[in-house]
Length: 404
Image 1 (tube, rainbow, N blue to C red):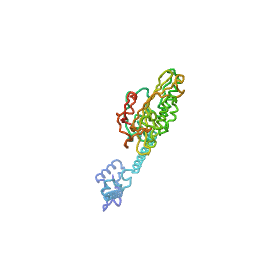
Image 2: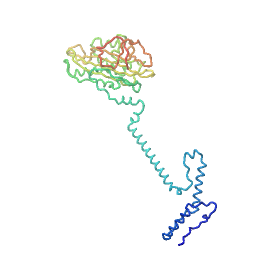
Image 3: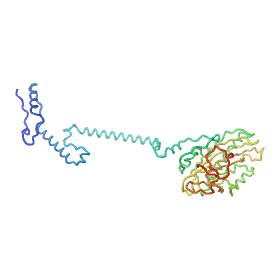
Image 4: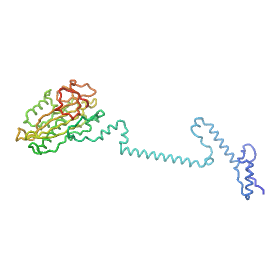
């Protein structure tokens, strides 16, 4: 059986520019024999010379383009092929679209993650704020629950606290940061009849004692150097010495007559309160006195943050502890005015105020200023220590404080 020669093409003739066949003569004759033996099927056709020529020229263009690129360009990226996509590894546009799809997916995931993160921070700012330097201490102080009311004398002084006060956080670094504030911190015990005085009389004595403490230690006008008019109106005018001595001390203070023994006042030309909050801690009890008399014992510490009146500098604190006993007496048995309060005894201790200055005001010292007044001569005291009794632990002279 004769074999069918392959179709002749002009470029198949030997000559310049012709590329040798990629199939050897022996392989080609084997293909023809197999085709004849199998029943005269069509023999496989070899790629045309034109196709081989085009492939060769495009390959030469690729190599020439790669040679023209500078050495750093060749290192940074792979040369783009000069051949059409289908001549190499298949439909390159599918691969490119796949990469773009993956990039769009990654960007979508990142955007969603960012939106979710921002939303979570808006809902719970602490997730971000907790990582800021110094925030943990402030957050812990802000979240700390107030101490329960004091019901008995403490067994020890409170522990030290970290931090320094400023106008935004005037109680930072003070045990008073967890104390209750203002008049609400003065809680009254439940009244009951004692010493021949009715439950109503005892309740009145407790309320008047609280009003006196508020009027002498928490009234904003009095703290700024004003007169404690409301508090003085509560005192019994029939009690000898109390009202006359207080009026004299307010009018012309000196060492023996100083209103700060009963009243907290600051010189408005020197300092102003650093905010509207005064921290308070203490307790109030009552007991029967002489027949027809109820006595109320109040022991409270007041913490006052103050700043200089000229606005220069930081914040300091003056701590005042007052221990006093008032008496409400039955006018049928005593020379007393009904509904008025008598002062049975009182004492006080102030921390961070100039020594031997008796002008009717407290004079707190600031860390960046030289203290006024005489140098402290007494022992150092912790003004927050409430476990000791002021009556049992008296000392003469003016001492320094271990903290403010």
